Image 1: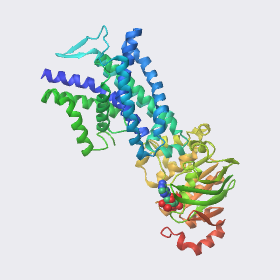
Image 2 (image 1 turned 45 degrees about the vertical axis):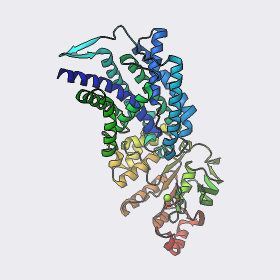
Image 3 (image 1 turned 90 degrees about the vertical axis):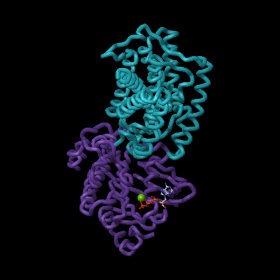
Image 4 (image 1 turned 180 degrees about the vertical axis):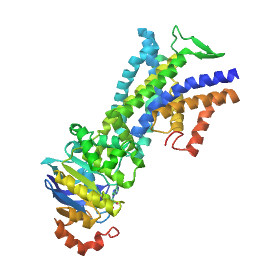
Amino acid sequence: MTAFVQQMVLGLLIGGLYGLAAAGLSLVFGVLKVLNVAHGQLIMLGGYGAFWLGALAGFDPFAALTLVIPGALAFGAVLYWTLFAWVVRASEETRVKNSLLIGFGLALALDALAVRLWTADERSITTSYAGAVVSVGGIAIPLVRLASLVLAGALIGGVHLLLARTRWGRAIRATAEDWEAALLTGIDVRRAYLLAFAIGTALAGAAGTLVSVGYSVSPSIGLEWTLKALVVVVLAGLGSMPGTFVGGLVLGLAEAAAAWGFGGPYREMVGLVLFFVVLVARPQGLFAR
Amino acid sequence: MLEVEGLEASYGSFRVLSGVTLEVRPGEIVALLGPNGAGKTTLIRCIAGLLRPRAGAMRWEGRPLGQAEAHTVVERGVAVVPEGRRLFGSMSVEENLALGAFAPRARRGEASRLEGVYAIFPVLRERRRQLVRALSGGQQQMVAIGRALMADPRLLVLDEPSLGLAPRLVESIFGLLREINRGGVSILLVEQNVHAALALAHRGYILEAGRVAAEGQGSVLLNDAHVRRAYLGPLAR
Ligand SMILES: Nc1ncnc2c1ncn2[C@@H]1O[C@H](COP(=O)(O)OP(=O)(O)OP(=O)(O)O)[C@@H](O)[C@H]1O
Ligand SMILES: [Mg+2]
């Protein structure tokens, strides 16, 4: 029983990162109608960014977030202008197709770049408090991962408030719902696209930082994280940041339960099973209204 | 104040407008009538900047229209109530109205204009926290008109605001348009409801297969329309 609870706790902890990873993908897809399959590579870059801020400048990984997030925002803006601004001019039907081509190209390029810059080795940030654990009734909770879960929730909550309460947040939601109607109300939808893409990239950067401190990064993790994020987006549906966070937790718990019940190899399969079941039974997602 | 001259527009190679000329003068209500598929919505999409015309010119307050990006049109004082309303259904009434005042110029006096809209449509104040998609069709039309008024327009363009509404509601909406017009807002009104529209409008145009087939004062056209009623009807081609 303790072993089961322990597994579930670990599943919940990584689930928070799944939610954070998915939040950016969901925002970009919901607003731009563009599926950025390189989203996982952006997470990978965020991880290396934090890693090098630590290795070269002695930054604590959590403190590095204060630089990784603005850096990723700026990087997202550049990516939007150089690559994705062209795609959103296409009609909505051809957008997804074109964005897949650009996304795969970008993913391959970033993978190759990462191998050149950082070699294919796995890296993870070690801190003085890396091994710290709190025990609750025989269950060990790694502090770093707990902090990551809390931060992931806080970041998602922050973006949720931004979208719900601010003028441009409202404009981004309006653009997601009906971009022509948004234009008619005077919203510069290109700017809404840019903001959404930059925020989505910043969320990826933050997720990457937390992955590199609680887990590890290597040039090959991009695709894996894109898939996790995609499963969560399908689970949660578009349009709700808190829903996406909960979707991430659900995936984390489901993986842990599968690994405990059927063995480690089934951990990776449960996401795909959920993916198909939800697509067939409830294509709008579990939490979409 | 709005001048459209020799406007041509098409979707791909399918030509919809072939040389439309019309104008809306300051303070006027102008009705734009015509059978389904005549190109009325297409004309409005051109004015709103959503569709680039093939040829022809549009001017608004003396300056060219349709070259700048669509979001700048409302900033210049032209607000559109589109066909099918196109509200943000997952947002509340108040959020939809606030979005109507998104343009920088419209932000000044936003609070008092919101009060104005609530004064015109008291039911919207009661429902202001409700999601728009939970409202009735008539209430949604009120939100659509309210959203356009929040932009503080000098020209209000409406594409079939009466569609799907009960006759009494249509009457009250048309009465409101007259009020709004008396407040100094010019109106371009696309309608299938020929009689009501021509009774309200100072002048009207009849669009047929992408051309202006007739124009004139409301009462004159109305007589004309008696003759033409057969093919101004919604099923006629
Ligand atoms: N997006 C589009 N792509 C291709 N053809 C279109 C498109 N929109 C409209 N059309 C065609 O253009 C013509 C004019 O359409 P438009 O919507 O302007 O007519 P309308 O006068 O507004 O008609 P209604 O009274 O039914 O609203 C129609 O033949 C229509 O089929
Ligand atoms: Mg129409």
